[in-house]
Amino acid sequence: MTTTVEPTIVGFFEPGSPEWHAARAQGIGGSEIAAVVGLSPYESRFSLWHRKKALLGLVEESEPMYWGKVHEPGIAARFSELHPELLVAPSPTYAAAGRSWQIANPDRKVYGEGPVELLEIKTARDDEGWGKQGTDQIPVWYRCQCLWYLDVLGASRCHVAVLIAGSEYREYVIDYNADEATLLREAGARFMHDLEHDVRPDIDGHSATYQTVRVLPEGLDDVDVEVDPLLVRRFHDAQDAYWEAEDELTACKASLLDVIGTGRRAVLAGDRVATRTVRDGKTHSLMPARTRRNCR
Image (cartoon, rainbow, N blue to C red):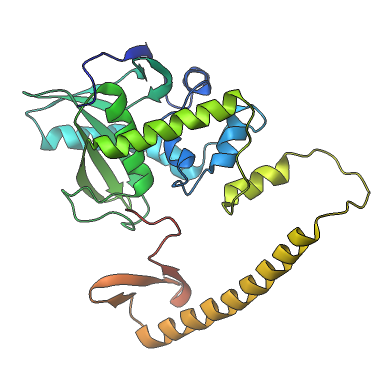
């Protein structure tokens, strides 16, 4: 447990509502801390910084986000059904004691015989990144979120209930880790310092960073802009490397598809390498099991 000092209750807000966004605007929420430490597949430190500066619009609700919200009550009900000894209740939005910028809005609080625990509710298209049920093997960006919430509330355990592909229910458990929580908290403090002092994060290779740079300028000036020759060399080298890697990846995909034939998955010692998808009886794509931001 992190502290005996109670966090501040900011209020009860509907996720995604204007009030919910306002409560998070001056701080870092659990779904944002992974971006701060470079582990989010959806947001980069660069894009989050610009969003917090109101230079970029709010994240628009996607179809997965919408359906995650729709399924949340049902997943919570299933967790309650499987754990009748526990009381599952809605949670308000909190701010950490002494750190008003560290925001937590857990999906649910869980009451039993011991200290209060948390419940996070997720949906996923497939089980990529989700390990064996009952373990702590969940996508790393969700792990960051759980640890962030535990750190704010001074709790020791967060349950994660996930509905995979609309029909497979699993549960995982994340226990508080002081070292990891400290790393997240310190990174959050540095991010808030940079926000306050207008220290813009460096441009990185995250797609969210590119999209941020792409939409920030408005209008078009029909002028030539002289650029640094080192940047030009870097750009050309990256283009060459990308085209070479793209050709090699295409060849590898073709080889894998050729080997697995009508099979569903390519595996190595039981571990998934890639999954073949089929539409109208024909191969549509080969999806790699690895992500660019792997779990711990």
